[in-house]
Length: 360
Ligand SMILES: *Cc1c(COP(=O)(O)O)cnc(C)c1O
Image (cartoon, rainbow, N blue to C red):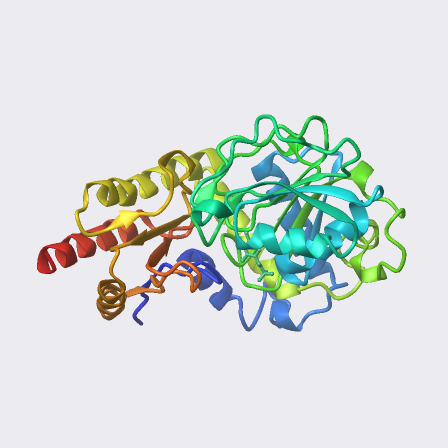
């Protein structure tokens, strides 16, 4: 068996321990004589799985009691519509556009009401986070929307925007559980799990209870109403059961690793190894304003497309996979999520140094 160092932005690396456990339980989950894939979502065994997963997530993130946790489907992209459909009571929302995902969310919301782009960093290829301390928040905005970590461009909000009292909604797909957060500052925190938590097919929505109402836009399908899923404890219809099971295992792994404070420390150490090298290298350079750098997604370039392609090819041959940058940015991107071991980053930097020497 040869495992590679997988720097994919998503679906992405998972803890090896979790994969091994899942393999051991594949044919017979805890004496049930069946795989979790084969069991009823109404069974006692699955009830334990989903309840334990939710409790572990609540413990990890310190989720207050007045927040619901929902395990949904449709990916983060479905939330781009579900959020305005459920929250746009005044049909007005403010969007801060810091990358492709925020832009898509803003465009989708425009279908349902007045979605104001109140700030953007598109003028500089989304390489920074705009100053959000005093934005022109609309008086009648139903919410303010951000994408907290920009997977493609490698930026992260180090401070949340001043929403002037409006509900904050955040897509945290690519920084979910990478560091502690104060859930009480948000109305909704959500993310697809395939970046930093589990297999594709599950999206986790953490939502303040008072925002979950029947007062949604006319014509909103039952399946796209948060209330449907909140009332049914995520079991209104068949949930993505196997995915939830793996997420639960990752939550337990995170607890064993010391929780989110410990993950933050580990992630900072890992990212520093790579950023320090990029700052000192004569061949490679990072593409993001230093203060806004993400701990999870690290884009970099040589400035020469042929050299970039050569690097990606040689890195792949050496066991470093998925380093090619997003098609809209070019260059390279190393995604170094929770499950990427420090050793993976150290080895990558060693390889980059050798490549730099050979191509000086
Ligand atoms: C990947 C990603 C998405 C899209 O997720 P899907 O599950 O494919 O819909 C949205 N937002 C962010 C920040 C992402 O990284």
